[in-house]
Image 1 (cartoon, rainbow, N blue to C red):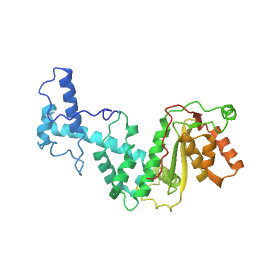
Image 2: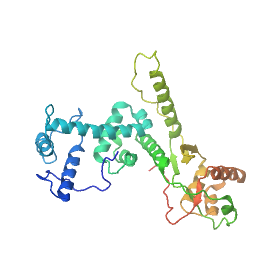
Image 3: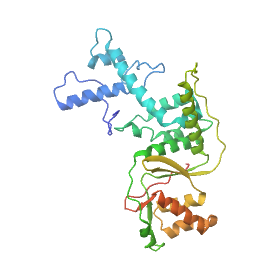
Image 4: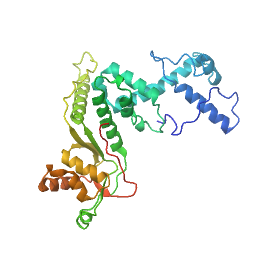
Length: 319
């Protein structure tokens, strides 16, 4: 679904009276889109007034004809609801953990406020939640008293979306590592790989939420099910410093925990440091045997690739 153009154009406050040129057609399309994308009222009806203060009935009549059953405004409202229901549903689909943490009412309020401040500007709904962590950090009242946890969950869930369809480069052959001196060797991490440091076990929290929802969905399909219950808020997990690698393996998304030392090594490599410097960043917390096992696993999973000038990916850490 294409919900908004990648580059936003200035809003047109009035529709052209006639469409004779491409420029007038573009102005007409921008005006209609701007009208459709205005936030719905709290009762999910279309806004009563346009941005210039005119009644929405007057605005709708500029570019929509009534039918034998619906007014111009009622026809516009159908499309406005379709747009807002679809993008809201997309956030719901991408953020089950955040939804479980906040509960239905607070999550719905968060989504509405977020989409008003950060409307979609991408050709794909895939990018819709990219700025959700930033919004939570900037306006913590929507998620208080668990705003830091909500921020980490939002980062974790967005990382899964990124990993799903980000690029993958040819894995680095083992002989390339063996043939280069460690003080000169620089290794890049796959573009689809994301490093996350969190103050909570957000991976296990989200897994528990998805498992619970799957069990609820299975139960709701049995013949003995007589009543559908609203999802309950999930219990808040205990704080625990956690290091997670979100990655893709054989076309599926996975998340793997690593130790603090392993995370420091991977982070240093991702920042462009040499293998020697990366191992030094890991500190004395891991033995040589452990590091060899880690690298064997990371190589098997295909996490490493050749470094190119464009490979300068930021490690995602709590702000």
